[in-house]
Image (cartoon, rainbow, N blue to C red; front, side):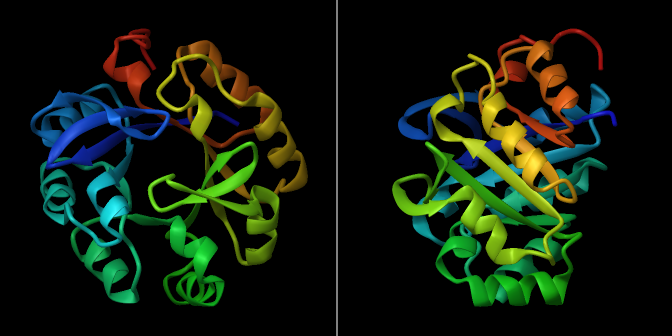
Length: 234
């Protein structure tokens, strides 16, 4: 199975930025206009995009829907959107703006009944459960709050309806130092029927190929693309 590379665009103040280990104080702007980044990724042959409203994640409400709308109008990328999704109305707004998927993070941990209802109503093929983890424990609210819940407990709570899980290793995110192969190996072995989207630490194509060899279906790539670490053609 060929792994799908999904470029990431993180938004603060309407601009395309990258954080280091989720630290809002360690923020670097790469594009003033995220549409420019999205077009670049499409020109590279990418078909998917992971769009994160970091303002929304921090404020617990969607803040950059206009960025999603502009990217969906300007490109043919299939976008998954996350950050600030708290209500069913939020999901409807995101889909109306052109997204193909929503990624639900904090709500998946905080209100499992509501999230299960969303999986049922909108379909597991459109709702991704996002788990940002530190030492295999789920973190919420823009990575600021670490819970006692493990990634395995979170996934188990949504079986068997679950199709997609996006797992970010916070300690490696934005570091370009390699991916958490042990973590993803355990997840692939334990949940063979789930499409796992890995995130955090990709520094080169070597990391992507290592994940592919484990059976990981997709990988989010951010800083490695912006810093020119993956100039080799797809």
